[in-house]
Amino acid sequence: MTTNLASISSPTRATSVVPAPEPDRIDLIGKDMAEFGTIAENLGMPSWRGKQLWGWVYHHRETDFSQMTNLSKDLRNVLDETCVVSRPDVASRHISIDGTVKWLIKFADGNLAETVLIPEADRLTLCISSQVGCTLNCKFCHTGTQKLVRNLTAAEIVGQLMVARDYVASGAPGSEHAHFTAPENGETPDPHRVSNIVMMGMGEPLYNFDNVKKALDIATHNEGVAISKRRVTVSTAGVVPMMERCGTEIGVKLAVSLHAVTDELRDVIVPINRKYPISELLTACRNYPDVRNSRRITFEYILLKGVNDSLADARELVRLIKGIPSKINLIPFNPWPGAPYERSSDKVIEAFAQIVRDAGYPSPVRRPRGEDILAACGQLKSASERQRKSK
Ligand code: SAH
Image (cartoon, rainbow, N blue to C red; front, side):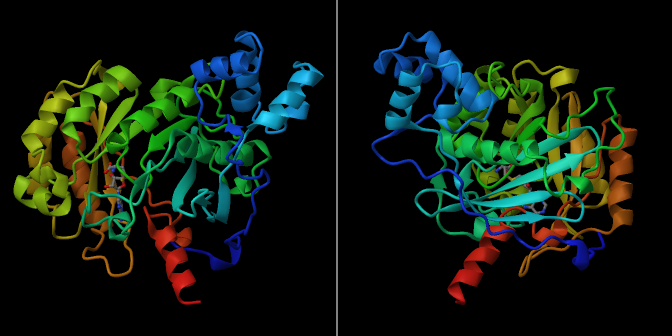
């Protein structure tokens, strides 16, 4: 993609509007409906008041208790003294010329993670991080080069969503770049609403199952954020023992980062393969609960020049996934400084895609997005840390 530097907005240094939660107050963000009921009861209210509060917090995005007008004044005062509706700090925000928005989010302990908003013709997708850093060390992924790893809490995962929802609802500065041009499925997209979630940011979501589940339950609850489960995708590098639970307990779509068709190569580029080899991974895909055409698995396949991009690889890929209702997302490698790989040429990518399509699988080639703002996984965080160290 050619980048037009002049039209890239400069990173916005934003400070948080809402104060970080004080330890003695209850942060309502990240709490589920049952907890809202308990909190209401503990404050002397009937538990159905918790439902009203839920609507204010998640549906209306209200952070100021005094604005919650269907609650009594006394109640609003009690809430103000005991609770808070937090947002994580935004360390910086970057808007690409293609409309992609990337936030570097700073959590209360100073840790950073990235969140990316991707406007497309018929949807507004938010890519959310599940961990600070990642333990998997996939060779092509920049996040794997970062040392510190911890799970994000449900509040921190939902917090990323709320930051993006505040942004798009506010009229979305930068949304003039968004690509809401040609709805493909007859639905008219609302440019002021995040419509889809992909857990494809930093980290391995199935290594942080409980918090990811809780956060996605909140995001899909129909009286709150109300994003349909059909529009939520969890992406895994292949944590086989957790895949079934992802289907039965979270009930969202699954994407699998396959990236190689032999164990020999996958052992190197996606090292979790040494624990859960391709055959076990594909068996788990075949058994993914409720796999139908509407709930088909997405296989992600990154194209690395001369490594996994031959026509023989494409044919083997088709052979391996035979019988699994699936779609194959071909991802041109997003390079980063010092990366040991290069992106395959467009011609090679197209030839690869043709073989997969001829076999009957939809095979979109993911257009690189936000390259001018370092949107590749983990790049922005590393750049910000380098900057800090050089000061
Ligand atoms: N751990 C999960 C989710 C995070 S990675 C997983 O592995 O699926 C999300 C997707 O981004 C994965 O398919 C990953 O392989 C891909 N990815 C990581 N680094 C990339 C890069 N430099 N270029 C293109 N895709 C990349």
